Image 1 (cartoon, rainbow, N blue to C red):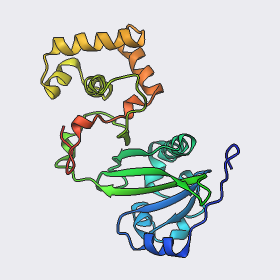
Image 2 (cartoon, one colour):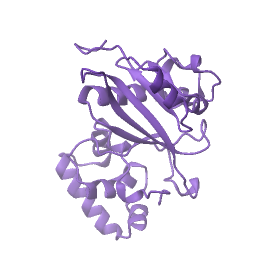
Image 3 (spheres, rainbow, N blue to C red):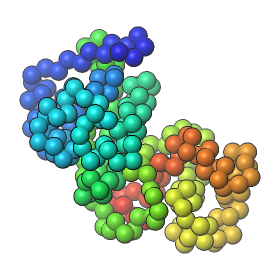
Length: 229
């Protein structure tokens, strides 16, 4: 149990029967981020064979390649807290080629009981068609990318410019990606430094990491059927 919130999640047999029929992964967690329910599609996503391998466990306790790389289990729990604490939805783009052969989108929404109390969260996944993984930004890209802006400090346009810089591209490489001149990108980044109150990129990057902007994928780079980079 977290704070004064009720942590018990009750699922009717009819709901379980409904979720069992979906071919997309579905899961429900309590306020402690323990799985109360998963369908077999979710079990397969973890690379496991039985619902008992997942139910009752935290992501960090599940014996799966998916949760063991890059401390993803801890990141998933942190995302869960945002959903339940603020009772708001969250969408992420998951890219884990060492564990799953394809990228997929995860949507997390608050789960309420009959008294309209938030008692956990529901999560469901959809596959995302990507034309070429070689088109992704070079370097170590976070495996769990936010599809909702973390807050309102930066505008969407700010995020479009700084996204590639945060992923390790130079001003020149960034300019080529978004059809601007290198000088324009450099001037724009300097404006962002002033907005944050720093003088160097490393300090700017640390600021962005502290607010999860390094994980945000701007809407401009997403299409309904594929990613475009």
